[in-house]
Image (cartoon, rainbow, N blue to C red):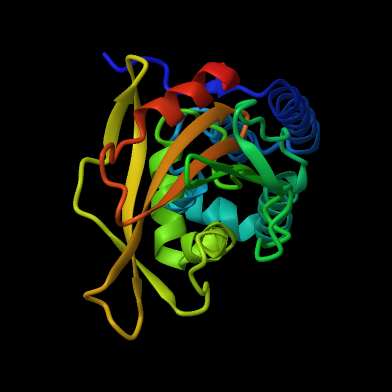
Length: 266
């Protein structure tokens, strides 16, 4: 059985719990005569705390459920406007909830703090990124809101997959790679075939290993990146990134650095 892989960020957990409690009350009062839709909406809100892919899984399921029977389709025709408006508001609230400031990153006392911001980060979802130097390596701690789910289970894997698909890992790592003296505009990242999970302190975490190389000379490896995703209940994810040169390949899993960080964050 998998050990609890994350933690609870109290401010985000309480805020989202209160927000969706009010939503539940609102839908119950507003759509009391539309029990079917009210039940589906409340059920989907609850699933946000358990389903790893969140809305990417739930929206298609909701559409199928709404169209699966003639009675459901007829009900949608009768209440197309209020149901559509309510559904859009639901998604907007979920997106706006991602603007809630995350908790501030905390590094080990032995790490040298070089930056408390990332100019390449997007304004949405809200995030905080601190960058450190330690033992010739660049350590980045990113605390970010994840808009698609509040679940701690599987949120790390889904978030890493989305980041890779959209190329967000390149933007986030520019600052770290620049600290190694590599021109951040000329590099590229290539995922290394490796296990998607690794065990630290007797717990499994989703990880990603990438190779840094020049776009003009893809055979020349400049360094490596290790990314460890640490989920938290309430819609927040911590991403620990460690960038090192290609000459330092003694511990590719960076056991000491990661374990030190986990000790601090627990």
